[in-house]
Image (cartoon, rainbow, N blue to C red):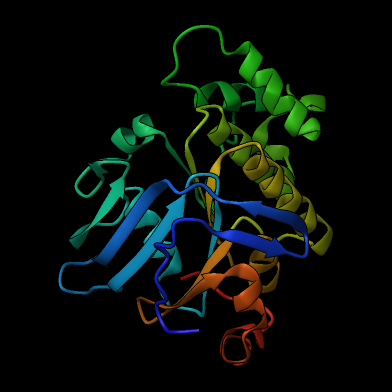
Length: 267
């Protein structure tokens, strides 16, 4: 595998141990090219990073502490200033847009922390997720409850009393209230028990298989690559390796450098 292998092949046949072989759309949904970005002027965490996602894909981003993986997710969503490069969502360049504008274009972002309204009920949190929608949201809300049955059973419970795993489910459910074309998940398994981690990964696959494209920034590299159509391994603010999730999972160099450590910390 070559460093920064191109993701521009027209048809990608995916062979993963946890999913049947499938064919990915030829249509790019997002294409981030040569992104230079950082929180503080003059200090660039991203040093020319690239990422592409095709319609229907589940793409994971892994890397060691400080690699820039979470910064990349935030830059796409307008939370970190982009100093150069372009982020094409269809034919629209997202660079310079505010998060509320990006949401209306069809992208939802779930941060690792502070991702629910703790004083509001589960039901009210889902309502807040649909703030840009007009009309009756009950059918969509019922669909979310079907996907996340634990939320349906506790719909009147305050979000602040939920466990970490339940909060993560609620945050994902709230993001799905907008029926996004692209869902960005930033470290969804962080600080969860192994059983809850598996539950979260199962839900991520369920959402993706229903048609939502996903960017999964994740510290649990092995599990993330196992369910990914493609993956990006970031190093020092750049995409060091790119390829099918199964290929990266079995690549000796990637394994030695990035999969030998139990957990990846948030960048």
